[in-house]
Amino acid sequence: MFSNYRQSLIKGLQEELEAAGSIIIEDIASQIREIGFSCRMCGSCCKRSGGDNRVFLTSADKEMLKSCSICPEDAAIPMLPDGMDMYSSSSVLEHLQEFEVDSEGRLNTFGWMLKRKECGDCFFIGEDEGDEEDEGDYGDEAGGGGGGGGQKRCNIYANRSMLCRTYPFYIDDGELNTSECEGLGDEISYEDSILLARDLVNRYVTEIKDTILLYEKFGEIQTSPDPFDIFNKNLAVGDLVFVIHDNNGSSVFSLKLYK
Image 1: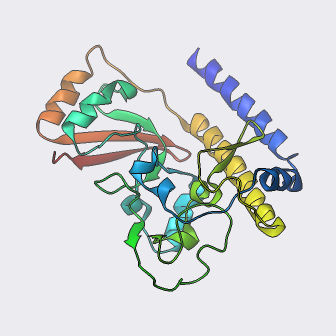
Image 2: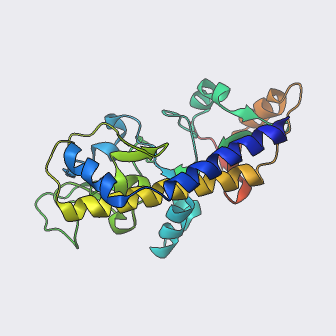
């Protein structure tokens, strides 16, 4: 039954991927110009105070991190529920029902996200830089991510993730959508709208391909009548173990709680 359901999901995604090949970049760019957008480099999308600032990482994002000499294992953490602090036992227990706990007491999740600071802000967002001059071409590209001088500077702006590069836009089921952002409604040039549209379609296609691979490689999670017995024993000594399912299969991520 599970196998049949998985195959139906894969088939649906393959059809969506095929349809994505018919998306016309100029059509998306025209919609972007009609909506309007400019990144104000306020860093709101990078900060926890701005709302859900989780950054889901695609396979391409992890390769991009490597290109800027950052080990993905040092920059990424398992995908977590919004607001969860994985180093806090009380926060883990608060969000426990949002995970599938396997027979070994491990929390199963899907995909990776960018690491965050203890305050919940993105790990790579810096502090205000006063009136320092821009370094590189920060702020000249379409797409969000807080890259400007004198603002909340992103330390990996040139290699930022697909989500950050295309925020606040995203494509869902072939349709352009927007997230909340103060920069919406501002004028955007033709050239920047084309660049942003290309990045959006690339992100959309990459996410579909990654999800297809995830389903193809996913192994059914083994459960037991009382998986929480092992989980609680591990938690009592400060151990927490995740199993992350992604386009490469599954991997284990272990950590020590300190809160």
